[in-house]
Amino acid sequence: MNLKKITSLTMMLVMIVMTYSGLMLFIAPPGRIANWANWHLFGLSKEQYASIHSTFMVLFIIMTLLHVFYNWKPITSYLKNKTKQMVIFTKDMIVASILVIVFLIGTIFSLSPFSNFLEFGDGVKNSWEKDYGTAPYSHAELSSLKNFVRKLGFDLEMSEKILKSNNIKYESSQSLAQVGEQNGVSPQFIYLLLKQNFQKAGVETIELTGLGRKTVSEVASTLKLSTQEFIEKLQSLGINAKGDDKFKSVSEQYDLSPMDVMTKLGYKKPE
Image (tube, rainbow, N blue to C red; front, side, top):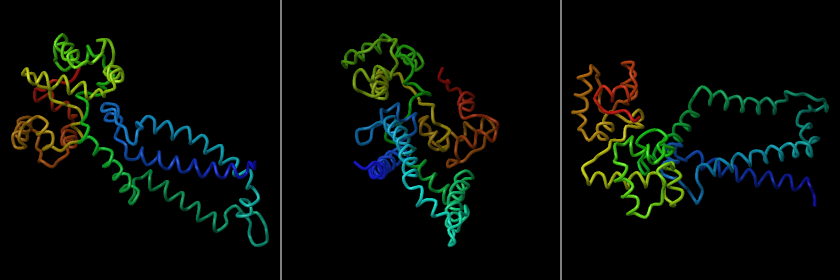
């Protein structure tokens, strides 16, 4: 076996795996969606993609160091001029440095086209929300079943009956994520199961999370109001807004958070 060849081949394979896992993480939904809906793509969860990317990064670093070791002479030759003298800032090194600096500065200061690329990624990530939705409050999947139904105003005894009738095994002290994992379903599945049954009984919930990312019209739709009705409610608080305005931006203009506005409108903040 040739360790030098093994190093180069391993670097190539690791780069392929890291490129793939990096692309998956680039398009994966935010954790609030991935954890809530038990998001998977090609059989792997976001957490598994992140784990793969991290461990292969370590292997890549090790292989890179070995690659530099085995190719030290060719690498140093790139830093020599025509008279074979060592010159750090050769023309090639300067171009390489400029390229790295441009990408670094462009990313840090959100300059175009780097900002466009990152905004595209954010758009893809957030687009998953339409398919999977969001939790009724932040990190709801970590709440115990008992606390979860209490925060939503659901009756615990009736909730347990609903779960039992649908063959969901649980303990009220378990988190929603644990109950989901035990039954091979997502926390979202359990929530929708309870929500649908309680709606039939006349109990309705309104998801007040993620409102800051929505437009005023989208928030109105969430609240089951027309855009005009919601705008009028905001005006009653002295807040002026248009349907296509971002709700977070509108709220911050009046030194309020989106939840502050919702509370002033009489909506209950999740406990």
